Image 1 (cartoon, rainbow, N blue to C red):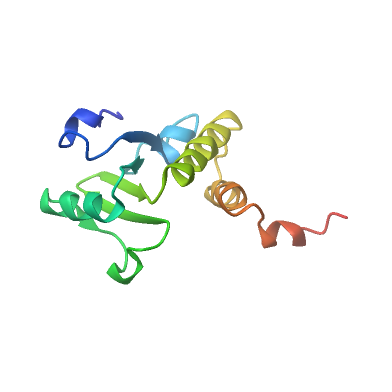
Image 2: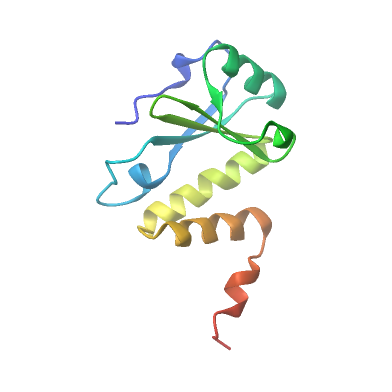
Length: 130
């Protein structure tokens, strides 16, 4: 489990790699799902292009390649390529917090990531707590 490393990519393509998702975050881990990773490299478009040349397939609409992240899949592995080191670091911190608090509910994990990445999360403001 979680054996993907930087050595699995051409030199310098992926500079940082962080396991994430329910298989990594949850205790006990969800074993019936893919392995998810955040990844960052200097040149966002080049990383995506070269990974596709290595057999990774886009998991999202190609029109969204210039946004903050792009997901690619190869077998049971998912790579979420993050556009920018600061955005990547936010994803790492979210993963650490989600793991620390053992967020088993997927929507709770999504809410946390949205809150940290965007600085706020509108839906959280409407929970009835005043």
